[in-house]
Image 1 (cartoon, rainbow, N blue to C red):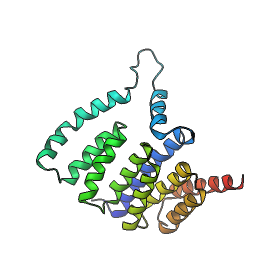
Image 2 (image 1 turned 180 degrees about the vertical axis):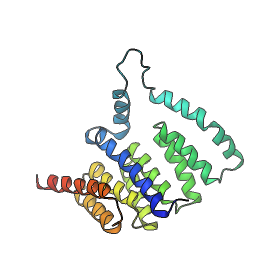
Image 3 (image 1 turned 180 degrees about the horizontal axis):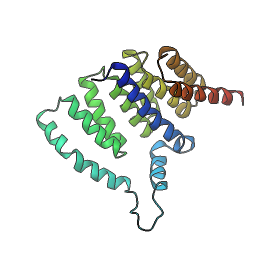
Length: 206
Protein backbone atom coordinates (compact mmCIF):
# COMPACT_ATOMS: atom_id res chain seq x y z
CA UNK A 1 0.00 0.00 0.00
CA UNK A 2 1.29 3.46 -0.86
CA UNK A 3 1.99 5.93 1.89
CA UNK A 4 -0.06 9.12 2.04
CA UNK A 5 2.90 11.07 0.67
CA UNK A 6 3.52 8.63 -2.17
CA UNK A 7 -0.11 8.95 -3.20
CA UNK A 8 0.09 12.72 -2.99
CA UNK A 9 3.29 12.76 -5.02
CA UNK A 10 1.70 10.65 -7.76
CA UNK A 11 -1.15 13.12 -8.12
CA UNK A 12 1.23 16.07 -7.90
CA UNK A 13 3.52 14.74 -10.62
CA UNK A 14 0.58 13.80 -12.83
CA UNK A 15 -0.86 17.27 -12.47
CA UNK A 16 2.45 18.94 -13.28
CA UNK A 17 2.50 16.97 -16.53
CA UNK A 18 -1.11 17.85 -17.22
CA UNK A 19 -1.23 21.50 -16.30
CA UNK A 20 2.25 22.51 -17.41
CA UNK A 21 1.70 20.61 -20.64
CA UNK A 22 -1.41 22.66 -21.21
CA UNK A 23 0.42 25.84 -20.23
CA UNK A 24 2.83 25.16 -23.06
CA UNK A 25 -0.15 24.82 -25.37
CA UNK A 26 -3.44 26.64 -25.24
CA UNK A 27 -3.28 28.47 -21.91
CA UNK A 28 -1.28 31.28 -23.46
CA UNK A 29 -3.94 31.94 -26.11
CA UNK A 30 -5.69 34.50 -23.97
CA UNK A 31 -8.51 35.19 -26.41
CA UNK A 32 -9.54 31.55 -26.70
CA UNK A 33 -11.56 29.45 -24.30
CA UNK A 34 -9.98 26.23 -23.00
CA UNK A 35 -12.66 24.23 -24.80
CA UNK A 36 -12.05 25.77 -28.23
CA UNK A 37 -8.30 25.69 -27.80
CA UNK A 38 -8.45 22.04 -26.76
CA UNK A 39 -9.84 21.20 -30.20
CA UNK A 40 -6.92 23.02 -31.83
CA UNK A 41 -4.45 21.26 -29.56
CA UNK A 42 -5.79 17.87 -30.60
CA UNK A 43 -5.80 18.83 -34.26
CA UNK A 44 -2.22 20.05 -34.04
CA UNK A 45 -1.12 16.64 -32.82
CA UNK A 46 -2.28 14.84 -35.95
CA UNK A 47 0.63 12.98 -37.55
CA UNK A 48 1.83 14.07 -40.95
CA UNK A 49 3.12 10.72 -42.17
CA UNK A 50 0.92 9.30 -44.93
CA UNK A 51 0.73 5.83 -43.39
CA UNK A 52 -0.28 7.06 -39.95
CA UNK A 53 -3.99 7.36 -39.15
CA UNK A 54 -5.24 10.80 -38.08
CA UNK A 55 -6.00 11.57 -34.46
CA UNK A 56 -9.67 10.97 -33.66
CA UNK A 57 -11.96 13.99 -33.45
CA UNK A 58 -13.59 14.97 -30.17
CA UNK A 59 -16.86 13.45 -31.39
CA UNK A 60 -15.10 10.19 -32.17
CA UNK A 61 -13.42 10.24 -28.78
CA UNK A 62 -16.81 10.79 -27.17
CA UNK A 63 -18.23 7.74 -28.92
CA UNK A 64 -15.25 5.64 -27.87
CA UNK A 65 -15.63 6.84 -24.28
CA UNK A 66 -19.33 5.97 -24.32
CA UNK A 67 -18.48 2.43 -25.40
CA UNK A 68 -15.76 2.07 -22.77
CA UNK A 69 -17.96 3.51 -20.04
CA UNK A 70 -21.01 1.36 -20.90
CA UNK A 71 -20.16 -1.52 -18.50
CA UNK A 72 -19.57 0.96 -15.68
CA UNK A 73 -22.82 2.76 -16.40
CA UNK A 74 -24.65 -0.55 -16.39
CA UNK A 75 -23.30 -1.30 -12.91
CA UNK A 76 -24.28 2.19 -11.76
CA UNK A 77 -27.90 1.47 -12.63
CA UNK A 78 -28.07 -0.98 -9.75
CA UNK A 79 -25.50 0.75 -7.54
CA UNK A 80 -25.77 4.51 -8.20
CA UNK A 81 -24.11 5.44 -4.90
CA UNK A 82 -20.88 3.60 -5.67
CA UNK A 83 -18.26 6.35 -5.58
CA UNK A 84 -15.54 4.14 -7.06
CA UNK A 85 -17.67 3.37 -10.13
CA UNK A 86 -18.46 7.06 -10.56
CA UNK A 87 -14.77 7.97 -10.35
CA UNK A 88 -13.84 5.28 -12.85
CA UNK A 89 -16.48 6.59 -15.24
CA UNK A 90 -15.17 10.12 -14.81
CA UNK A 91 -11.67 8.91 -15.62
CA UNK A 92 -12.91 7.29 -18.85
CA UNK A 93 -14.43 10.55 -20.04
CA UNK A 94 -11.51 12.67 -18.89
CA UNK A 95 -9.05 10.50 -20.81
CA UNK A 96 -11.20 11.09 -23.90
CA UNK A 97 -11.14 14.89 -23.35
CA UNK A 98 -14.85 14.89 -22.51
CA UNK A 99 -14.29 17.19 -19.57
CA UNK A 100 -17.87 18.26 -18.86
CA UNK A 101 -19.01 14.64 -18.74
CA UNK A 102 -16.07 13.73 -16.50
CA UNK A 103 -16.78 16.62 -14.14
CA UNK A 104 -20.37 15.46 -13.80
CA UNK A 105 -19.33 12.00 -12.63
CA UNK A 106 -16.66 13.39 -10.31
CA UNK A 107 -19.29 15.71 -8.85
CA UNK A 108 -21.59 12.76 -8.12
CA UNK A 109 -18.72 10.91 -6.46
CA UNK A 110 -17.90 13.93 -4.32
CA UNK A 111 -21.47 14.15 -3.10
CA UNK A 112 -20.89 10.67 -1.65
CA UNK A 113 -17.29 11.25 -0.52
CA UNK A 114 -16.79 15.03 -0.22
CA UNK A 115 -13.40 14.72 1.48
CA UNK A 116 -11.75 12.98 -1.49
CA UNK A 117 -9.25 15.72 -2.26
CA UNK A 118 -7.63 13.92 -5.20
CA UNK A 119 -10.96 13.57 -7.01
CA UNK A 120 -11.88 17.16 -6.22
CA UNK A 121 -8.64 18.28 -7.85
CA UNK A 122 -9.42 16.13 -10.89
CA UNK A 123 -12.83 17.76 -11.09
CA UNK A 124 -11.22 21.19 -10.89
CA UNK A 125 -9.01 20.35 -13.86
CA UNK A 126 -12.04 19.21 -15.86
CA UNK A 127 -13.96 22.37 -15.02
CA UNK A 128 -10.98 24.47 -16.07
CA UNK A 129 -10.66 22.65 -19.39
CA UNK A 130 -14.39 23.18 -19.89
CA UNK A 131 -13.93 26.92 -19.49
CA UNK A 132 -15.26 27.25 -15.92
CA UNK A 133 -12.28 28.97 -14.31
CA UNK A 134 -14.16 30.18 -11.24
CA UNK A 135 -15.66 26.74 -10.68
CA UNK A 136 -12.20 25.17 -10.87
CA UNK A 137 -10.80 27.61 -8.32
CA UNK A 138 -13.77 27.01 -6.02
CA UNK A 139 -13.17 23.25 -6.09
CA UNK A 140 -9.48 23.66 -5.33
CA UNK A 141 -10.18 25.99 -2.43
CA UNK A 142 -12.66 23.48 -1.07
CA UNK A 143 -10.05 20.73 -1.42
CA UNK A 144 -7.63 22.84 0.57
CA UNK A 145 -10.16 23.25 3.36
CA UNK A 146 -9.99 19.47 3.79
CA UNK A 147 -6.22 19.25 3.25
CA UNK A 148 -4.51 22.66 3.52
CA UNK A 149 -1.09 21.24 2.61
CA UNK A 150 -2.18 19.28 -0.45
CA UNK A 151 0.57 19.78 -3.02
CA UNK A 152 -1.57 18.92 -6.01
CA UNK A 153 -4.31 21.40 -5.12
CA UNK A 154 -1.88 24.20 -4.28
CA UNK A 155 0.02 23.72 -7.52
CA UNK A 156 -3.13 23.71 -9.65
CA UNK A 157 -4.55 26.68 -7.79
CA UNK A 158 -1.43 28.68 -8.61
CA UNK A 159 -1.56 27.69 -12.27
CA UNK A 160 -5.23 28.57 -12.66
CA UNK A 161 -4.95 31.82 -10.71
CA UNK A 162 -2.08 32.81 -13.00
CA UNK A 163 -3.28 31.60 -16.38
CA UNK A 164 -7.03 31.63 -15.86
CA UNK A 165 -7.43 34.81 -13.81
CA UNK A 166 -4.16 36.63 -14.52
CA UNK A 167 -3.83 36.93 -10.74
CA UNK A 168 -0.09 36.85 -10.15
CA UNK A 169 -0.42 37.53 -6.43
CA UNK A 170 -2.82 34.62 -6.02
CA UNK A 171 -0.49 32.34 -7.96
CA UNK A 172 2.54 33.34 -5.90
CA UNK A 173 0.66 32.85 -2.64
CA UNK A 174 -0.41 29.34 -3.65
CA UNK A 175 3.05 28.24 -4.79
CA UNK A 176 4.86 29.79 -1.83
CA UNK A 177 2.47 27.97 0.49
CA UNK A 178 3.08 24.78 -1.49
CA UNK A 179 6.83 24.98 -0.87
CA UNK A 180 6.41 25.98 2.76
CA UNK A 181 3.91 23.22 3.56
CA UNK A 182 5.74 20.48 1.64
CA UNK A 183 9.46 20.56 2.52
CA UNK A 184 9.67 16.91 1.47
CA UNK A 185 9.21 17.74 -2.22
CA UNK A 186 11.91 16.30 -4.44
CA UNK A 187 14.54 18.72 -5.69
CA UNK A 188 13.26 18.71 -9.26
CA UNK A 189 9.67 19.38 -8.16
CA UNK A 190 10.78 22.24 -5.92
CA UNK A 191 12.92 23.64 -8.71
CA UNK A 192 9.98 23.53 -11.10
CA UNK A 193 7.78 25.47 -8.69
CA UNK A 194 10.56 27.97 -8.02
CA UNK A 195 10.99 28.52 -11.77
CA UNK A 196 7.30 29.34 -12.04
CA UNK A 197 7.56 31.72 -9.09
CA UNK A 198 10.51 33.47 -10.74
CA UNK A 199 8.62 33.72 -14.02
CA UNK A 200 5.59 35.29 -12.35
CA UNK A 201 7.75 37.76 -10.40
CA UNK A 202 9.50 38.77 -13.60
CA UNK A 203 6.11 39.25 -15.24
CA UNK A 204 5.03 41.53 -12.39
CA UNK A 205 8.04 43.78 -13.01
CA UNK A 206 7.24 44.25 -16.70
